[in-house]
Image 1 (cartoon, rainbow, N blue to C red):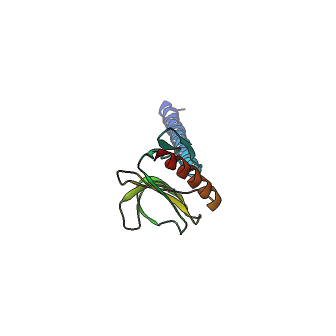
Image 2 (image 1 turned 120 degrees about the vertical axis):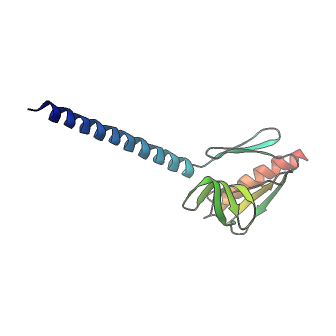
Image 3 (image 1 turned 135 degrees about the vertical axis):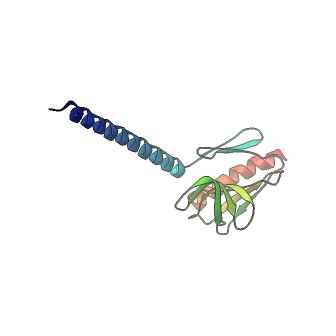
Length: 149
């Protein structure tokens, strides 16, 4: 038996093990990213803020903000600036229908959405998986926003 053959086979085995480890880590990361994109965000309020927690969470200052409940079809996101798009679910910053880049958490399967425009002009498009959930969320935001004025 030649010592070089034994060492050569050992190197090949280590390369295969290292490659398999890298593959498993990569698949785990992709699975984690997809799971985060599909997970529902959680919503909470502080005295002046509406807080969206989860992947691409944000805090929206409600003082001086305009909150509307749009009952028409959700706007189309044209390009993604910084976000995640899995099927019809979009989270993050997107250019919407020829306008500027705005924050959005949207499920394009729903037929309504909430538009929050803060006093600086930034827009936030938000909806839930169903029209009922979106309406309930709008009622909570509108109640909190009206108490700010």
